[in-house]
Length: 126
Image (tube, rainbow, N blue to C red):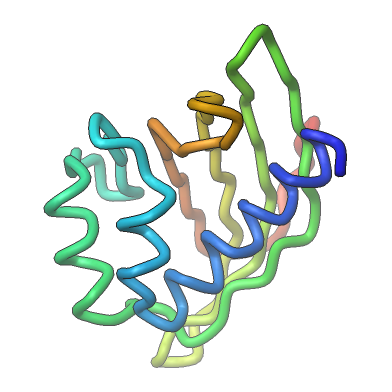
């Protein structure tokens, strides 16, 4: 399986783990030095990210629509564009970026950042 295919699957699994509060998936696949910048600007380390993931998502649905992967010498940038629906039925768009590092032959997420916007779709490069 190609690195691009593996990284595409990891992003899809990352999203599903978020929606289903699958903290075990995160424990296994996030690097120990993982950091997440949330859409509100807060920064979480791995332990706090997993704790928050266990509390359940603030979204009812999150759908990846587009993925772009760039691989560099043991590192990869994974960009995604998605749409979401909150529990109160409001909808929006999201861009996310994940940084992955290849460790012992396996890709581990070392960083993630999400930007959410409400309202109509805006044009973007992704």
